[in-house]
Image (cartoon, rainbow, N blue to C red; front, side):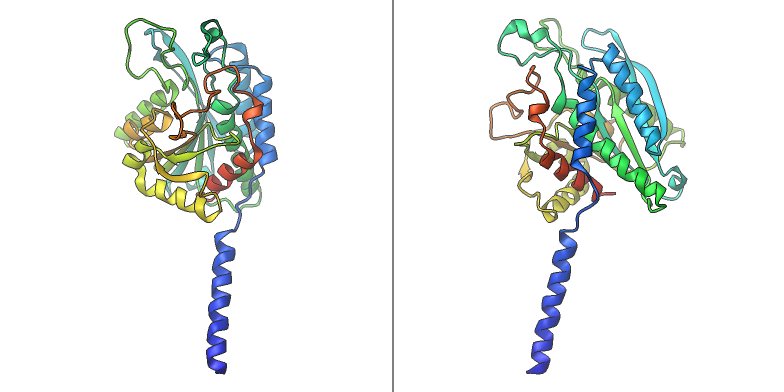
Length: 325
């Protein structure tokens, strides 16, 4: 009987140990991420090559440097929907570069530009306003800046072992506007990631590109009613990593947010990282297949403001990202 009771006690203790490990929280502060989003919004809409856009870019570079990253500014040109070259400024923060040769890096990305047109507004005259971009743009950047702050702390404590690159892509939201009625061009979205991926592919051919294990792109990750299904391009190109991320989300208690449900393919920055650069990359993006468009009612409208940012959602996304590093 004593042996039997001891056996049961060991099982219960083991189970408790597993439960504690499953709910262990990675370090992340939603208040900090929220403040980073507010700071971006204070610049105004970050429409490419506008004054607020350039001010925000300078601020992002300063933040990454202050947090311990080696910062690279990638400049180039990409044709927009009219065939006109748009100046691109991709901002890349390299963390733990001493590990570059020894271990593959992890890529984290988000776009920092905002859409020049509110082309989902029901009233036609309102479609020519700039999108404020609290959720669509600033939320992903805010989460990654807080991730960068955590990485900087690990550098200071000499505990960072994972090499990480954080990329703020430019001109993601420059795709053909609904108000345009001319001939349609292909690949008018995600211009910054197209530029980065093409440059990376060329470097890889020459044998001097960084090695990446996988990537995560965050887009529209702050809404109170956020819903992140398994995006199809991510499933096709990076299934193992997508499963890993969604499993971690469930273990952290965010299974309802990171839904075990397949969505349609979405053209986002991750697509070009996968297709052109050949790096398996997963998109975490709000896309609710339960409604007509998949996107929130305020998507690409003047209502994309701080009212649509939830600290609890930021905390969930931040913890899930940190769990992968």
